[in-house]
Length: 115
Image (cartoon, rainbow, N blue to C red; front, side):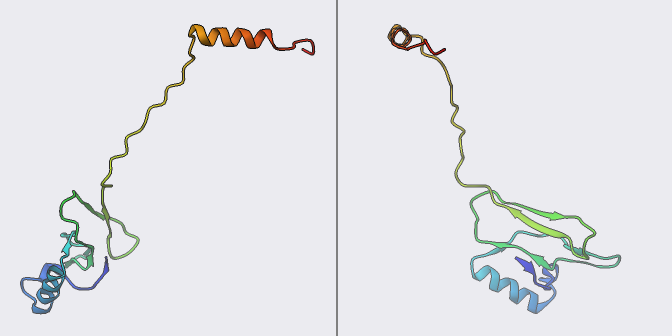
């Protein structure tokens, strides 16, 4: 990813841009940002690029509109392959006869004279 200063919007009309993009494709990558990332009053260019070779998972590219720079921000969200399932923990008291007997025996064997 980066500010490549190669306007991908001109790949059909500019030979060097078309050659650059062909090289990207032949290396197994595709661009994920497909809209202009630098917009002025009279021009719009796609010069900020992110490439990926992930083709099977859903990708969420984004262009962040900001006036911090003359370029918009770009990012790519790649969902995690593994789904993390929260394991629910239940805390409970076991009031079985065995546990009640053990509890009563502990009480009977405890010295409460100092309390």
